[in-house]
Image (tube, rainbow, N blue to C red; front, side, top):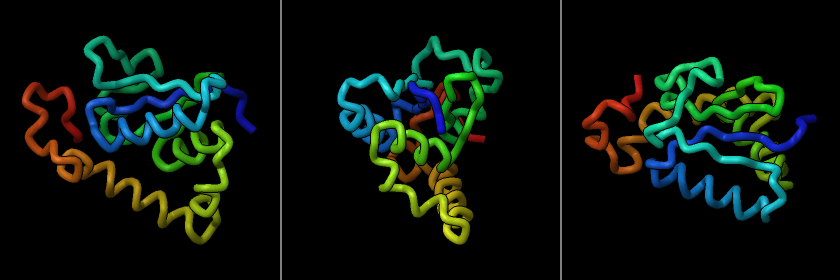
Length: 130
């Protein structure tokens, strides 16, 4: 069981990512169980979480209250649980489906710039996915 709030390091310049973050914040209903931090902001510093900008740009990360990082689908499972909607993604933690859901997210993360119409959006290199 996680202690709240759960922090998501989200790419606010990604339209789909931003929409998902906005939805999660609406589901939180101001309870403070979830915090979003925009990694596309110029002042964002991934090193304060013990990771790199390339790592957080390559896959969504979440920060537990104790500072432990989680990434990928685990972020979504924890975020939806934090706002009381854990049942939506419960299936993605089932032993047979977990590897499929996790792999599906990895494919999305790798191609999200292309999938969200931002193929050429990375002119300054800040949003490059390695």
